Length: 208
Image (cartoon, rainbow, N blue to C red):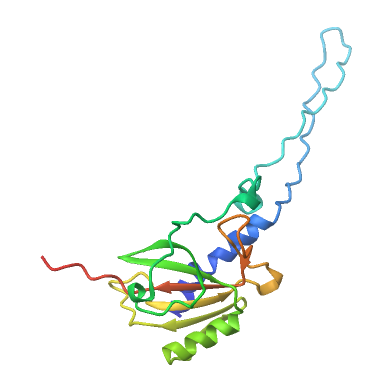
């Protein structure tokens, strides 16, 4: 149960952000305001009814606001720099990184841990099979929709860890999605169908 909650709150949140960036928000329906009451003049004649002010649409919620898209002008010329960060090695992570996977970035998980993301052009099933063989572990399909498979690579200690040491593989083409967008516009591939998340155990602090 803890595993499902943690994966749902971290890795699965990315797909929501991605779909929000791809869709346009529907503007809320403006509610017309009633006209102000008519005030009679001293001569007994009735002033014409005032026109209702132009209704202002209600402020959209966060779910209605589309994510800002960076400009794609000149995107075809943008390529990863020659000295781009290739990410941590398998030795540094303590677990093999799928050969050919592209390093996408890392994020602070807290308590000395980080989430390391790698994009793969292979299918979800191929990557899962690879880690089943290399880790000698069948792992667990923690979610069927979108398909998300998790392999433990260490014991989870709730009092000292923010996330279980693990390898998590997720299918980003589920529901017809094009995949996880390449951080470099114009670079190939445009999107990765599968994302590998590796979370090593926290590095122990040196004794004083």
